[in-house]
Image (tube, rainbow, N blue to C red; front, side, top):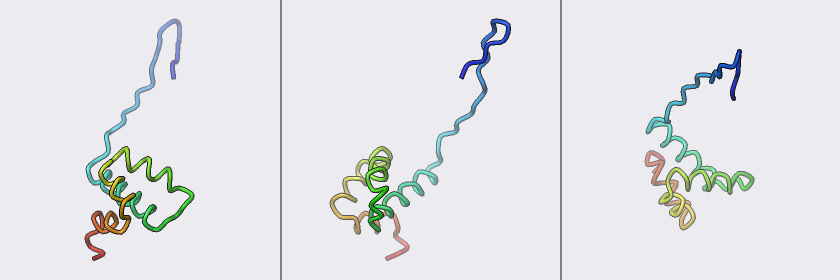
Length: 77
């Protein structure tokens, strides 16, 4: 978005912080859980997001959802 006042362009200041490793890991856990529990509506979107974040996990969850779920949730063994 651009704002021009008296011919001077102002750009709103927006700070976008990169996600922490913890946030990324939490997102991956949630995406794998969505696929594992087969909530079909968001399945494709979850897989696309997972593939963008962790392609190796997306491949694993495609091959064996249970193994992928256990890999990101070791406390549920």
